[in-house]
Amino acid sequence: MASKNVEKTRARLEKRIEEGAYYEAHQQLRVVSQRYIKAHNYDAAIDILCSGAEALLKAGQNSSGCDLCLMLVGVYKTGSLAPSATSRARLIQLISLIPPEEPGRKRFINEAIAWSSKHGEYPAGDPELHHFIGKLLAQEDDTYEAEKHLVVGTKESAETFADMLYEWYTEDEPHTAPIYAARAVLPYMLIGNLRDATRLLTTFTRKLIENNSSLAVQEVQTASVDCKVVPSLPLLNFLNLLLLACQTGGQDMFRNLKSHYSNSLMEVPHWNEPLEQIGEIYLGIQIRRPASIFDMMGSMFGGTPNSVPQSRQIPPEQQPLVDLD
Image (cartoon, rainbow, N blue to C red):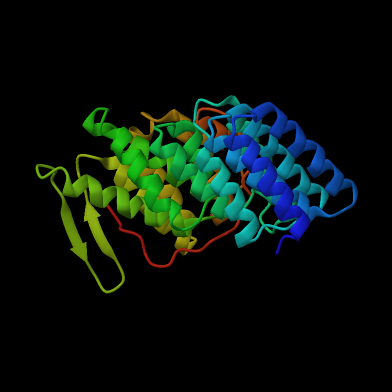
């Protein structure tokens, strides 16, 4: 709980902001917080900066608000504060108040992720933060940036990711559906996350079938496999079988799969390097000159991610849909 002195200071400066004395309040907030930082009273500095930034942002003073947001993350770093529900909630609240056109928002997001990476348990950054940021960017139709966060988010991110990619796909030609699904499936697999690769592909395929009544779909069910076959989309079938091959660990199945779909795979040459790396990661198929996993993920996303994802090897919860041509 904040001390009485901190509460009085916070109330006084918030009143100055309400009165329109934005510059004065901003400067005093900086001075007061620096005094607490020098005294190693990080809780007080955080309280002052968070409330001040929120008040300035709500008043439309986005540049000044972002400046205090960056100072707040700086205190998190200086105080070696670990990601928690409370520390994360402050950042999420502030990010939500910054308009997308404000240049300082991207830097604040990057600094927040960098802090959570260094002081948290996830080298790629806090998944909850990534999920919130990715979902926010998806809502703003900033798909290229959103996917970089969603791929290292939470298990809930897979559904958001699938929805975003499906909406993006609907603006393109019908036969391109597998290309959009692969933008998530392959990166998920490259970081060892079969669970969310499976969940996303299942969601994407379900939406595709539900929204295309004329799409021919064949179903095959056994005790261990639920098969949905889309004859007109062989690459979608390939992705499902790829997930199965990586779960069973069969090198022969992987090689036969690539051979069987070789003609279709010629249409997507940018899949070649990720597939080689996937074969090595899951099946031990050595490649002579492996490309960097992160370079390949960058090419999948149209650029290098701000945060380098870390392989987590998350197994699938269940068998994926197995599609054959």
